[in-house]
Image 1 (spheres, rainbow, N blue to C red):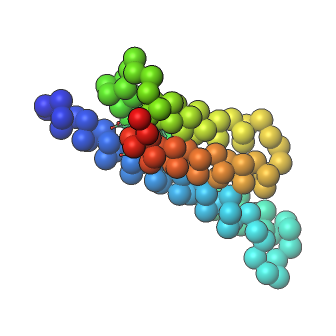
Image 2: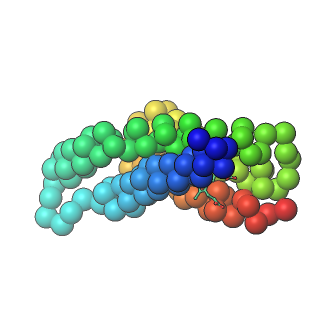
Length: 134
Ligand code: HEM
């Protein structure tokens, strides 16, 4: 595989896996946290837990693939550079990694779900803008 084919493949893998990861966390943090009308808090919690557990089989591997492909792209294309592009990519990566830990550290499911959604939104914005900042 030539170098450029490898980079393009890594970018495809990165953008698609990041979309799955951030997309689900944002929908979970914004939509799934609300209890459907006519359900008790306990029912809502059970439905939410079931949806999140089933989605995690796809979303958790996607998050790991996003992280690994992002680290590869950073080392292949941006290592050593310190322009606003790299700063934006680093902010985006930091926000994405923090979204992992916010859940582990915070027992409050709804607040931490919303915080994770905001962090991944920040990550997406920073990544999308990065290449145009110099
Ligand atoms: C987990 C940590 C992450 C790291 C280390 C990382 C790293 C990177 C790097 C280095 C690039 C630039 C690739 C290049 O110059 O060709 C990039 C691009 C991109 N990343 Fe990430 N990323 C991470 C997470 C995310 C997440 C969570 C999202 C979505 C919310 C995301 C969305 C994107 C997009 C859309 C691009 C393409 C930007 C463009 O083509 O202008 N990344 N990422």
